[in-house]
Length: 338
Image 1 (cartoon, helix red, strand yellow):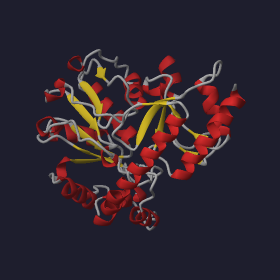
Image 2 (cartoon, rainbow, N blue to C red):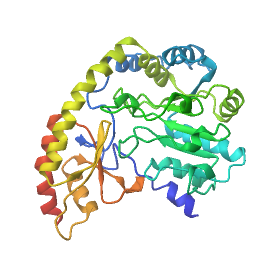
Image 3 (tube, helix red, strand yellow):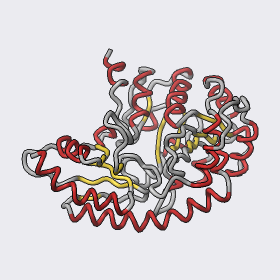
C-alpha cells in the first residue's frame, strides 16, 4: 500500500542510523539545555510506580500555569501522538478533508493519509485544520485562518515553538484562540526532546469533544519521566532558566546567520530558535550529497523537503563551537562530494 510505505519513511531530526550527531542542527531543542531543574526532576522520577492514571495533580498544575480550568487540560504521549488522535477524532466525526499550511510538520499529513482523509485546498473546506505559530520549518508568524473562527470545526494550533520565540509576537488574537485546541510540547524549550510528553488546552465549552479525545487515548499516556518533566515545566526555576536562555539564543542566532551568509547561503527570516536557508552548492552537486558529506563529519542539518520546502535546510540555533565546525566543514564537504 502506498500510504503504508510512506508511513515507514518519515524524516525527522536528531539521531539517525549513524548515531547521535556531534553537532546537531537538525532538531529544534534549546541549545542552552538541558534545563537543570527539569533534568533533575526526570532523573529523580520514580519509574518503579505507575503514575496516577487520572494525572489529577499534573492537570491541576498545568491548569494553574495557563489559568484555565483543569478539565480543559488533556495529556498526550507526544505532539505526534496527539496529531494522530485528533485526526482519528475528526474521522469519527465524519470529516471529509484536512487542511494544512503550505509548509508544515509531516505528521499532520501522515495522520491524514493513515485515516484516508484528503488534503483540502482551503481551510474553510476542511473539518480539521492545523496551524503552527511560530511556524515550522520557517519559524515565521502564521496568521490564523479566517475559518478558525468557526467553532464547528476542529482547529489546532501547535505552539511547540512559542516558548522559544526570539522575536515578534503571536499572530493569534484572544477571540480566535478561544476556539482552537492549543498543543504544547515543552521538551524542546527545556532541551529534553528525548522525554516524550505533551498537553493540550481544549477550547472553552468543548467538554464533550474533550471527553471523546480522552476516550481515544490509551491508559497512562505519560510515564513517570514525562510527568516529572511537565511538573518541572510549570515551576518558577524552569521558567526563569528558560527566560535567561533566550538572550543567549538571540546572540547565537545572529552569529549563526552571519556564518551561513559567509558561506553564500540565502537565509530566510524567522522569529524562532531556528531558520531556513538555501545553501550555495557547487555545480553538479546535490543538496543530498552535501548533507551526506557533512554527516560524515559529525554535522547534521535538516533537509526541509519533508515539510514541502525543497532546496533548503532548517538549522536550529547552536552553540558557537558547532557553528565553527559547520563553517569549517562545509567547504570541505562540498569539495569531497563534488
